[in-house]
Image 1 (spheres, rainbow, N blue to C red):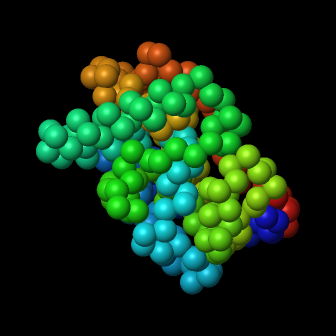
Image 2 (cartoon, rainbow, N blue to C red; image 1 turned 120 degrees about the horizontal axis):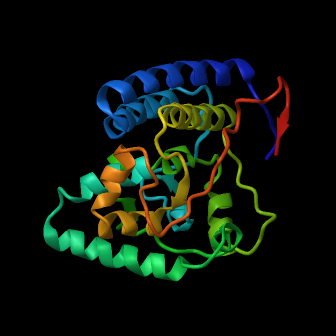
Length: 241
């Protein structure tokens, strides 16, 4: 999909969120700061000028079969939520997470993009951790669900390009990258990890949380990937594919 970057909108979101996130990380720590940032994230998305063009509706879950990358702070926020659930539900979810992680083990990003795997938290066609869902899930919205269905049905077809709402997309990604920059500025781990593998590591390594809060790499057996900000160096009127 090709669209023109709205530099003014992107810069405004980045400047505001980076400043606010930095203050909250310093005052309340990264996990609480993420919760506050996600509330602003949802508010920004809901007020995007082209939000009415979205086709996403409750019960539509094609994208819940695509793998995603997350940051450690998101994993710890999800894990905190899971610890509030009944033990039987925790065990059920851990089994699903383990199964997904095993299926994805050893695959690179391109290989993961070519398979479907149901999210461990998908239940009855809906997200069971919606309030703490990762940033990528908050941003993934399309203007035509048929494109998402086609991507699900033909995971090997790299020519499928679902249509997104340009301003909604830019606002969401600018917000996420601004928070990530604030996290990095504060010296916390800012790498990205495959969601199932990172969540399983956090479950199996109680010390992962303290390592993260002490500003060292949280997962002993996982190598994270660096993802640079998408919009910080964009030139005005530049076209994105």
